[in-house]
Length: 138
Image (cartoon, rainbow, N blue to C red; front, side, top):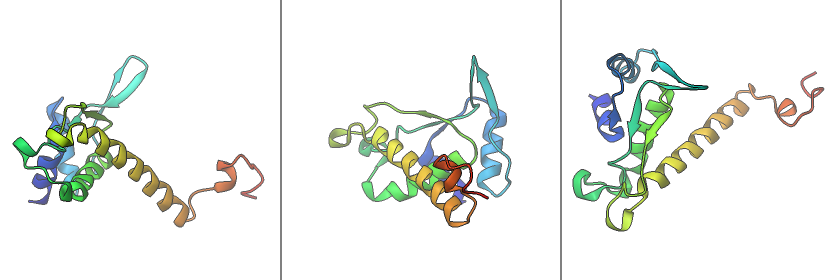
């Protein structure tokens, strides 16, 4: 099953059982989203995703050629509503120390660029308003 491969690459950390069900449903075609919790003034996803395997050759047999597959897993969990990612500079082994943090930054930047590109190509993005020109949309 494709979603099992995605989950193994993403190494999701389960914070609540209903969230796991929501994530699996999302990855298998159901459009349900991960639940949200409030932590003071901040709203976060009720499920987090661990990145320990990203860059870990010793335990996870990581190879940089897997980065695109890991990105697809990252995109799937972000599309499902996950906003919390567990990472540390020690995630990665030997010369890849810190690889998880590097990939997380690259993946989020890429995701945001793709979303912006999708909106602008579909005509849904109003550049005039974005640039502060209120009359551009008229």
